Length: 367
Image 1 (cartoon, rainbow, N blue to C red):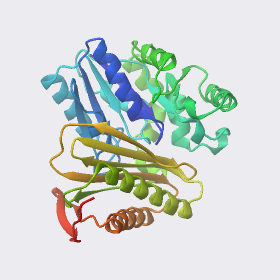
Image 2 (image 1 turned 120 degrees about the horizontal axis):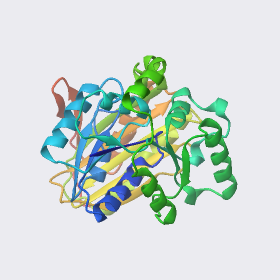
Image 3 (image 1 turned 90 degrees about the vertical axis):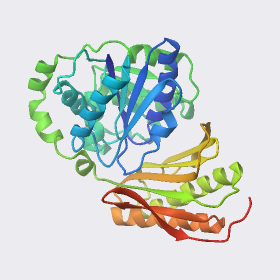
Image 4 (image 1 turned 180 degrees about the vertical axis):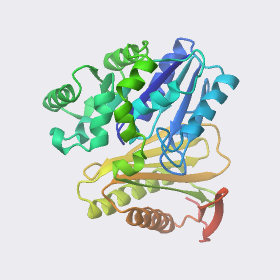
């Protein structure tokens, strides 16, 4: 069984890339399982990726490279015993250390598991051209990668692409560099899939543990604390009955854009990722924003019919106090729902998971 670790900072396009990769592997007749690690208490990417022919597990409330190693081992063993996949894809949080994840898995003593090259995805539009401007954990991710995938090339010009290639080569002269657009597909994405699927030529587990022993003594600390990223996630159940898809899409975009503007006031050059999902009937509205200067990206996915409408928001932003981030997300989301006269129940975190607490009982209207 192969294990693929596909990392990348917040907003680099991991989920879209993995969705396309699952299709690619499925066309080859492979059984694929995915482990999605969300930094917040609720997950979005697992629902986005899940579908026929793929088994998905979510691990939330921390990072699998440090605080959630036991959960990671349990999930891996459970998947191998119950699903018997040919390939397991690990999508860690955007602040994780993929090299440390690989080392942790190697120490678990799992039988017949091999690794493909460690992948780090890059969004060139959010990458500073100066090495000195990169946060330490971002630099470490790129230095540890065996394949550096420059994603979203459809949104940049040749000059920016060349600038990004030169920066990545300076950071990591050994890695293979490939560029593509996961959203558009094409020859570049196919080449990336071929490179990512081969067996890793990296050091053996014993050699690697010896060579990175000093580094692991640093990385073994909590990656969330090291990153300087504040994270918060929340969930709402929409109790209004007749909500049109147009309304779901519209309010999703408004919430994301308003959060972006308010976070920009706190940090005009914020780095991070704000994600949203709106499960609506047979549709799954997904949106994201990754910088102060971009409008939210919204897409609509077809899923099995949802029994209830749910809105989830996950935010992870650097250099913004967590208390301010919580206040921004909660007040913006509830305010926009009330503006549209949508009644809702906010999920409150308890010691036993999430409980539903009524927040609003507004007059319901048809949209």
